[in-house]
Amino acid sequence: MGYLWALMAKVAQDKLAAGATEEAFYKAKIQTAQFYFKKILPRTKSHVDVIDGGLEVLMQMDVDAFAF
Image 1 (cartoon, one colour):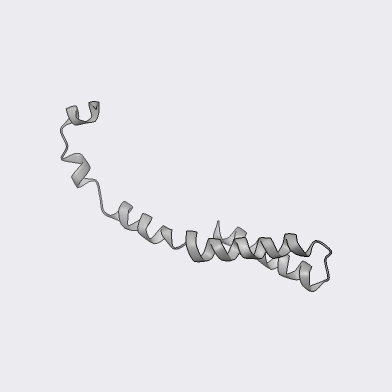
Image 2: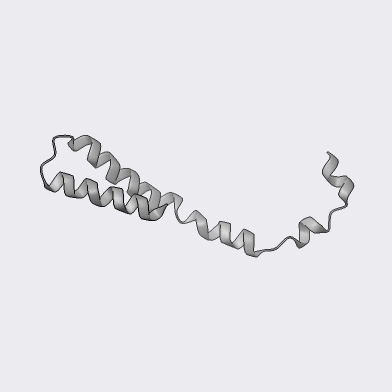
């Protein structure tokens, strides 16, 4: 997903440099990509930590505990 945002930002920068008339649109694309890389992408580290944490705690639960 990060690759696609980087690609969209690059295309937007190129379009702006070429003098595209949809300046607000391309600036919004760049700003959205910046938001993604600053706020969303870093969350993947915590997701990896959760995945690597294993299932031990969950597997210790009694089967009946899942009926609630």
